Length: 280
Ligand SMILES: C[S@@+](CC[C@H](N)C(=O)[O-])C[C@H]1O[C@@H](n2cnc3c(N)ncnc32)[C@H](O)[C@@H]1O
Image (cartoon, rainbow, N blue to C red):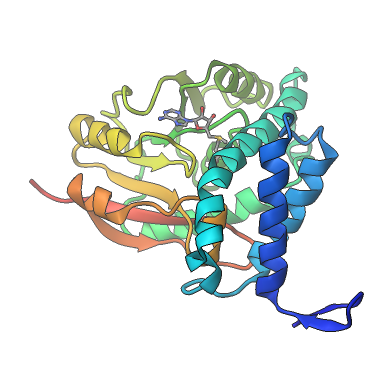
């Protein structure tokens, strides 16, 4: 129990989480600027994310069944996606303004450690699920303006990465950053929607949590690279207040069998699910 000192009453983690959820909902719906330039966005999102990570009911959380929470979550999730894109773009503009970047420069990104940790967990889970390629490239769909997932996946495995994103700004900024790091031969940036890309030649396809039209992306992967494994970023329990949970039935319909998931930790929000293509 946390303590509400003003009222001297015990306050449960759920009460705190509910108040931060409501505050984040109201601020994100009312503000025009959802980037880190807006101090209201910074403070409400840091408090909300901390409250989510502090709530250890991964499987069952009564909050998720409250009609108010269910309704507000539907309007909050698209705003959170926009705020994440704006946050990535904000940091990417700084990185892309430099001609040369070093590994130390990358540590200036405040969430760098979270990416390093998430990718390490994903590599362990991909190996256990037997979907990590030995030499063929990993295609990352929805890599965004700040391609840390691809950078860390390459640094930790040595595998070539192909990042795809439909957004022209995300592609221009991430291409500049990869060139400044001297990684252009190891990490290719392609402007394409995940629904149109030709995945043949891929060793593994990873789908970011915020990718839209996921069913169409899955169908396209299955059509163009039928024997390749999939990794889909998802969220569980109370963390679905921040991200949609991947639809395992859609993956089953698309011809994929569940093969494992990354470990849930106290600091990583996402869980990544791994799938093997079902033999036809
Ligand atoms: C916030 S960002 C990046 C995610 C983050 N960097 C990560 O590692 O998970 C999400 C990106 O996905 C891209 N995106 C969303 N749906 C897509 C799709 N169907 N095909 C390609 N890119 C997509 C958006 O343009 C956006 O840049």
